[in-house]
Amino acid sequence: MVPHLTTALTGPILALERRFLEFSAPIEQWFRGQWQEHMPPFYASCDLRNAGFKLAPVDTNLFPGGFNNLNPAFLPLCVHAAMSAVEKFCPSACKLLLIPENHTRNTFYLQNLAQLALILSQTGLEVRIGSLSPDVTQPVRIELPYGHSLLLEPLVRHGKRLGLADFNPCAVLFNNDLSGGLPPLLQGLEEQTLLPPLHAGWFTRRKSRHFAAYARLAQEFGDLLDIDPWRIAPCFSSCQQLDFQARQGEEALAEQVDALLTRVRKKYREYGIHETPYAVVKADAGTYGMGVMTVHDAREVIGLNRRQRNKMSVIKEGVSVSDVIIQEGVHTFETVREAVAEPVIYMIDRYVVGGFYRVHTTRGKDENLNAPGMGFEPLAFETGCNTPDCRDNPDAPPNRFYAYGVVGRLACLAAALELEQTAPGQEGAPFQTTTQTRATAVAEPV
Image (cartoon, rainbow, N blue to C red; front, side, top):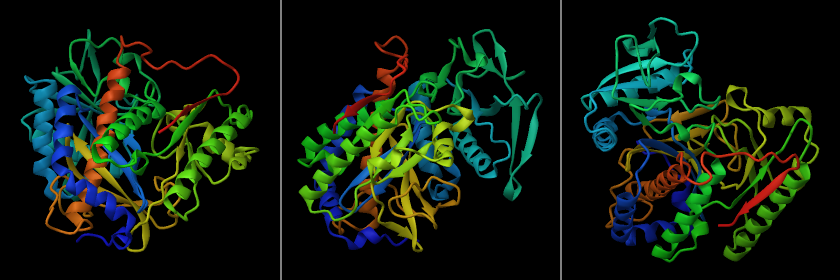
C-alpha cells in the first residue's frame, strides 16, 4: 500500500520531478563522480519536506535511529549497502561493536537497535552491543516484542582500543549521537575504525555548517539541471552566543529572522506562491526535535514567556543552547490518512535503502513533526528511491520517491563534505564556539 500523497494533485512540483527524470542519467553520473572524491558517511537519514513548489531537506542525522520503521522487504538492500560500507571503511573487519543511545526503556529505539544489529550480522560480522550507560555494569538482557531480545554489555577500555570483557572488535559503530559530549572512555582511541568518526557527534557538529555545505552542492546541482537551487535548498542563517533565560541576544535573533523571512517573501513573490512564509529556529546542535520554535514574524522571538524560554534553553542530555540556526520553513503538503506527514529517507554508504513517513495528527503543515505524539508509517515506500520509471508519469510513486532519493543523497553528500571540513587537523576544526558575550549573527545565503 502506497499512502495517498496530496502533492500528487498539485502541479508545480511535477515540473521539478519531471526535471529529475529527464536528467536521471546526468544526475547519476554526477553522483558517481562526487562519491569518487568524497567518502560517504557509514549511514545517515534525512528529513524532507515537500511543499509542492519546493522539495528540500530540513535535517540530516548521522546516527539514524529508525531502522525498525523501514519496509522489511528492504532488508536485502540494507545488507548489500552495509557490506559495501564495511568493505570501504574496514575491509578486514570480522567483529563489530555497536554502541547505542542510553534509551534502555525506549522499546521503539531498542527495536531499531535490534534491526541494525541484524543488518550488520548478515554482512558476516560478529556484532555485540556495548553500552555507555553508567547503569550497565554487567550484561543486561532486554526482552523485545515478538520474542526478540537484546544483550547490552558494559564497555571495557583496552589501552587505545574499546571493547567488551571478552570481545576485541575491529570496528566500532556509534548509534549514539554524543550530544552530552565526548566521555573519557572514548578519548584517545587510535587502533580501531570508528564509524562515524567521533567528530560527527553533536558535541562538535553544527547544523549551520551542514546546510552551508548543502547550499554549495545545491548551487552546483542546480546548474547541472538548470533550476533555481532554492527549489531544493532552504534559506538559513545562524545566531550565536544567545542566552534564552537571560533574554540575551533577542534583538540579534529577531534581525536574523526578519532578514530570512524577507528573502523568502521575495522568492514567494517571484514564483507566485500564496502560502505564508515562516522560519524555524533550532538549536544548532542536537536532535529529537528539541530546542525548536516556529515563527511567522520576527517579533515572536522577542519577550518569550517562561515556557518558551525553557523549551529553547536546553536540549538532549541537558545541554544548554547558545547557538541556533534560523531555517526557512518548508511546508509539507503530504498526508497519510488525513494526518500531516513528511518523508524520511535512509541511506547506508551512498545507497538509498528505504524510507518511511513521520506522521503527526495534531500538527499543521507549517509545524515541526518531530515531536511527542508523532507516529511512523513503515510501509510507506513499496519501491526503492533509486529506480525511476521514465515511461511513467512524474508523480507515479517510483518517480516521486526517486526525487526524494535524489535530495536525500544530496544531503548525505553534504554530510560527507561537512565531516571532511571538520576532521581533526583541518583548519578551524573541530568546531570552536567564540567567547563573545554579545550575540552574533552569521548569514549564509543560498
